[in-house]
Length: 317
Ligand SMILES: O=C(O)CCC(=O)C(=O)O
Image 1 (spheres, rainbow, N blue to C red):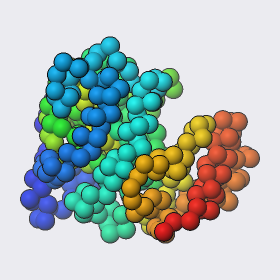
Image 2 (image 1 turned 120 degrees about the horizontal axis):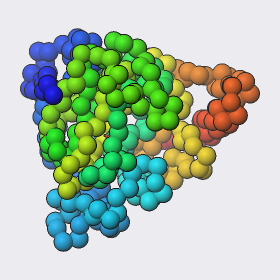
Image 3 (image 1 turned 135 degrees about the vertical axis):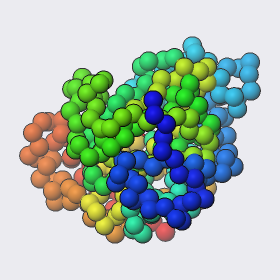
């Protein structure tokens, strides 16, 4: 596999990042964050994983040696319990607001930066096929504006054997690529683009890519849990999908549940202070809740509308 084209953080002032992104569909920035910036969140997550029995009790939790008998992945009930407790951490939600990350995101989208509030954590057990994310484009799952980007950030050194992400260089130029209905993935070997690029991604490195860039995880063949974040962002003058602001599933989860243990109000509902142009708008959502093709989609639009209205009625400081 060809190695990432890489940019050193110290060279950011002299490089045209947007041009790099347009050309290759990704930028790999080495040493953007210093490993100390990761310590707080990494420590909070490790404590939770240790309490939940996901780590080998014989070794130092910071080594992340997995308890294989606990192996599970997104979609499993056990995974959700652990995931939800990580998702409620204030340190998890404040992470994408780190000044260095935001400065770099602005180089890609302009000064009107909007960080999507629903950051994703990835907890990837080793040698557990069910947990491997195969080739896809974020735009297929996330929707919204195509000019959106992901920052993929491991919270520790992530050598190739621990299963970092790799990307299909130049694939963002081919529009949405077909996926199979059963998996939502692009069939292996059918990805369009130049070629796969990858390599070790270390603590402090950040891989940014376009919403149409095909990417996938390399299988984690180590004995360690891989812990990483996907943070999504865009320019807020471009349309923002309301589904990025609320929980769209059938569970009654709300931002109030997430905020329960937070010690500061600063980032609660921060998007309400941003002049967002929602697409679909509230009127369009109401229409879609009646006219969308399937009952499942009608119910989903109705939920999104209801939750957006609820949020608008919550006062923020
Ligand atoms: O971290 C992973 O395994 C998958 C991440 C991913 O697909 C994404 O960031 O969109």
